[in-house]
Image (tube, rainbow, N blue to C red; front, side, top):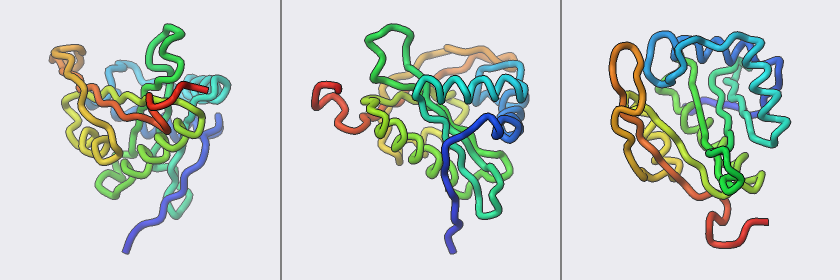
Length: 176
């Protein structure tokens, strides 16, 4: 029996549920290099900014309409030459791991990025998160490098894996 999930665009009303999912990752893991969990107001600002700048911020809900995952994209680099490239970020509620939700959120985010005309997606994944590497590989991301000891959290240096996948026509055609 497979579980049903629905995907939709986020709105600022989702900020509390997004904060609930993300806070344990900030406090107890090395999946993110943030050290202070963003509060509900800050998540509302981040969601609104993504929407305003035409970057996807997607929500995955289970059959009971419980928010179980989120993902968003942002410009990969600050210079204008990166305008067709995005960095994607996804998080799944820790109580929901192992249910295929990571695959759903990464796939939805990739589709939303491609629909907006972005051409390359990059995932920046802490080496402490091998399941995330697997989920991204299944979604077409390929390893392109390792940044050794790129981050410091919880008293340790952490490597970061860079993964990349083309979106839409990738670099096969000129951008719109």
